[in-house]
Image (cartoon, rainbow, N blue to C red; front, side, top):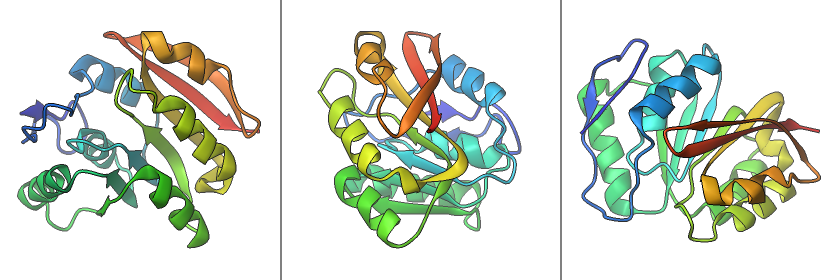
Length: 185
């Protein structure tokens, strides 16, 4: 079980999947990130959603139009179960898909977000393919939006190299994870 750290649903718990591959963002790191990012009335895309905890954290802090993208059917069902338990009417959509298909599909449909958060599995060589897909799809991020990529300390350099579409504006290390914060060029 994970606990939502702040906002409307603070201290509510969400059930997690038993998948061994799912790694959860530490509670102190989640709190620190959402203390920095104002989510009020902002849309939020949660790539590699896993348990969906980042989506629930964003919603708890006032986000609207939240989309959780996760490839595991088991994890998608877990997110849906937590949504039903916390608030079945919350503004959370779940897309059970690979990020390489989901991102271009969203762009083709003209859907963009204020905050795009990506938490790919650590040290499994997802950072470079993720950044390549995002590079080809900068329209996914609204004009004044923010891209946040969570990575291990070892992968931080791959994100910090930047891209042609995004400028790295900050990197923060919390509880052994690194949040790389980028904006559109």
